[in-house]
Image 1 (cartoon, rainbow over the protein chains, first blue to last red):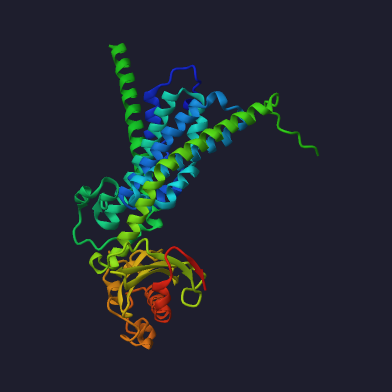
Image 2 (cartoon, chains in turn orange, blue; image 1 turned 90 degrees about the horizontal axis):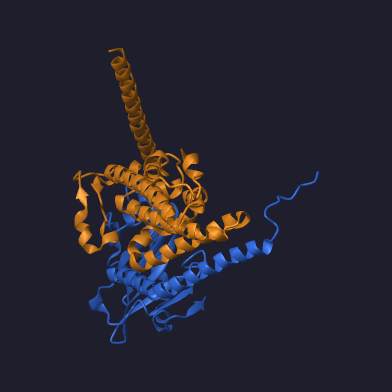
Length: 243
Length: 219
């Protein structure tokens, strides 16, 4: 499926439904292709941290995909990789400066992981596999789908770890949304002494493993269901034929 | 064995170079523009963070100068080991020195560097100590954060006379400061670093207040 969507040529029509299904589910960066695990595991200890990095990565993917797509006439095969690197690094640095200026406290928490978005191989992967072969609108859609998939996986992981580790959801929301948002914190387990393992890197790996397993289980169930319905339809048709 | 060079579209290599150069120029121009637009705001934000940290230690009514601008950097290896750069912020009221806040670090935490701020009044008494960043173990060593426990408040009002110099250590080392359950190395590092800062203050008080702002002095 990845290969099929990767080799979509510039002329053929882009199936946006397929782009989003791939980005969000079939080749979800966080849960299936497992790219960009370093930031994924490092900052996913609360929902807000996860959301901050997820949004920054999402924005990077959309903008870098559009830039790569726009630069297609310039990108001769022998220079395309260095060109991607320059484009992605510029986009990430711009986002880093904007975050430093307007979301300074969140930036201080996410710290080194914002510049490290450059090294998230999912981004150069989408540039090479999709953006370099498609029109800007399609490239933007692919960036949005892939970024949303990554962001959702991050937030799910952040929610799981924050719930286990602190017994809350959305703590420190004011770092991202302003002082009114400190009221958003949901204390789901009061007087919770905290579960340290969930906040440590080991807990991040365990939680990610659980999420990957849950996604695979859902996927298998959905496939079995659609197969069953095919079989049932087929057998109904046969019965109809016999009757 | 001869290695065949990889043949690509080598008919006009200068066109590739030109294209890559163009990408680099556009990227650089974009960065320069965004940097110009955001620089002032980022500096403001950084100063706001510094001022908030400093005012956690010295309340606004105790001084009337912009203490985050009245600072200088220095290094002094015996008191502040491993060549760290120490910043001294001066709090003054009507020109009279009130207190100094030192930004320094304990280098011997369980996971390395623990960055500290210590406010010392002209009397030699500690006004307060805060940890600004550290890598200590969550759940054990992070009790030094004020958000997690009151341990760091034990420094309030302490000086080199009270407790005595020998008592400036954690209890396990025969001193008067509590250690935390499960973590001795972290509090020991903080207590020893604050003690060294107080000793430096005792010996260099005049210099700390009289050195003009924004100058790097080597010692």
